[in-house]
Length: 315
Ligand SMILES: [Zn+2]
Image 1 (tube, rainbow, N blue to C red):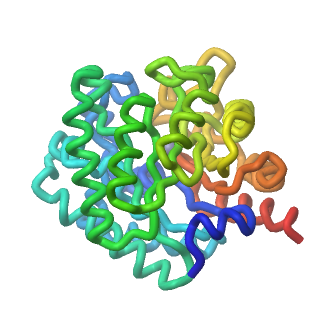
Image 2 (spheres, protein in one colour):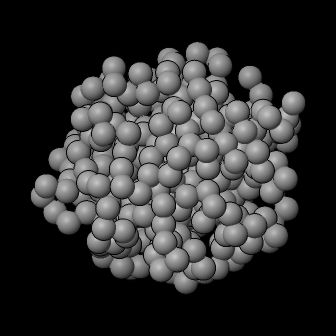
């Protein structure tokens, strides 16, 4: 099977959708909202991936749906799978088991028909303890990347980082592992700068300089809202752009769905239609987007529409 870098050169790679929100809707993932106010920006406690060991059939089924919908890549559900985040959810001792099980499940379903990516996200330490905790973040991210490499992922997707400083650390850990890394920041509450104050163009350049094979954005915005920020990134670098938008409507005042009152328990009220992902798929190639997938709110119907949009242009 061709590597992620070769596939992005050949055309638009179709990614998969969002796992945690979809599995929360199906009753297998805990949003944490019954115990604490989620979405405060202070590093909430839940949306962790223990479903990989507690309800493997549910995760296997969602992987199957994304593959069947046309995804060229399956992301192992290792999002929020650092020991730091799992510790707070009560699963720290199972960090190795959860990461290994998630990769094994994705690999089984992919079965040579899709690449398997390890998902690595922020630790939430910077939100909780400030920038002086970056040394601890490095240890946790390096540990998770080692586990993903041992489990045999094809490449890494570093995603949903709010601070460029933490993303740069993750890219250093990825480089040390030798695995190719797609790097996407998440911008909130506005798309004009990340949490530690860098513009999308600055983020794109810094991530490219740190060795990412593609740079871009994921989560927080619907495709239409995310597009200007992706264009700014595309204008700043020569490497492929990756985009995995959310399927939730944002507003002119607040560009991130996790800061809207509907998060996390009333997201159905701000759901965008799959048509927006069909349109997004159609324009991906012209916008220089070589990796197009979905994030929170995207189930298989959205990925099917996205894949249809990509192939409409291709044919
Ligand atoms: Zn998301």
